[in-house]
Image (cartoon, helix red, strand yellow):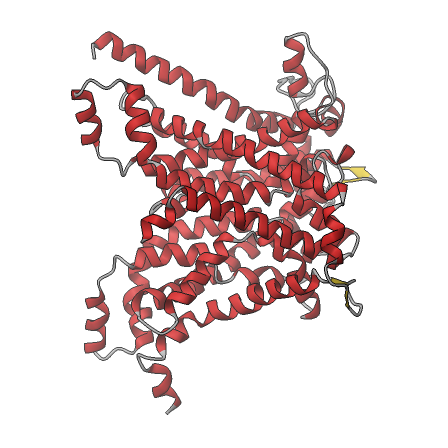
Length: 279
Length: 297
């Protein structure tokens, strides 16, 4: 290729991606500027791109931080639930994955097919029987109802097992020679080696948990226990809308994930694309 | 004695996988069986269930609202496949070009929408597709002298809003899937093709597309699943499970309406089983057709 043709290709590619990125980023821009406008503007004109300093102010942010509403209760509920869910899911899924990768035992293949099966069947069809089960277990309106069904996450087990298949069996054998117990080998030898893979899965599970809506929405009925997505959803009701809080609250709920994304971009991408690595 | 038993090499693997077995049995197998059972019952939460045979299923066959929901979900699924496989694949190939400027920046900006929750993204899109003159979409239409339109009150424009939301959120993620698939294609293939005088288009059709097949099958499988099970997107766009003339009603939306809103658990369970069957049939046919099972022989 000649130099001038190379340059032409470069410029075309660049312009093409600038245009597509523009469409992708427009909604973020719209939400950001709307966070500075009064809710009535939104009701009257919808979400738009008008940058009008006359109507823009920090009022919504003042209201967000000082107003009489439950936003930060929801925010911290979500935060705590996300942390607990991520820690438990990762530890339990890693343990299960280690069982699958380090040993040969009767029923192993059958059980692993079950892991794959979970990934192939829509969770939504289990909503009602699960709802009935949680109701009968007296777990309605508790965080256990949200945490327990997903505590051994199939996708996470699958990913950890792939990762562990790269660890030599000799390491485990050497641990046995040194007199470590089966569990000692896992805790002292394997878990430390698995650390790098935890980051990607923590982000994948953390994002799913932070953004999770339908199931928590079904089992939580007490406003003080709502998570952030449920709380935001309830701001719009047939009896009255709180657009002031909705937009600034939506904006503020994306912010922490953005900051994390910028800081740990590689792990986000690893976590999100983990499933397709081996096709 | 018990300690020696638990610590033996024969028993340890079962201890390790025990949490999965428990969760699988309690929160998966049991609800699935219970779902089958419920689909043959007339059942309301907190009351004695009553077996009614295939009544729920025969009623579903002629339930116009249910058929509408299936139509909506199927159309949505097909259109997301048509948009969200070829375009992200093309973008991945283009962004992977060695002449690309600012690759990392564009990769990140394409990925941003996937960070938002459906609740927030759906709210943003509802307001962008608002029926007021000043809403983003109507101000764009006004530039062309069209509108204003009531996007969320008509079938076609409502579907466009749903697809815009899905495209916005998933283009970047699918592009990343294809990018990781592209890494597995050796550069030699392209060099050999260049020596033989192949054009860029020929290389794309003869090398890239066939060798990306495993990634395409993966994206196809999860998109079929996600398309047929879509619900919250519609719930957020119409701020609830009721849309005018049911233009936004999906299969899961109908399951939710019958089961949770109308406390008609048996009928809703039958909707779930039909969804399970449709998903399984489509995905197994698709996997047999694309040859995934053959590869494993």
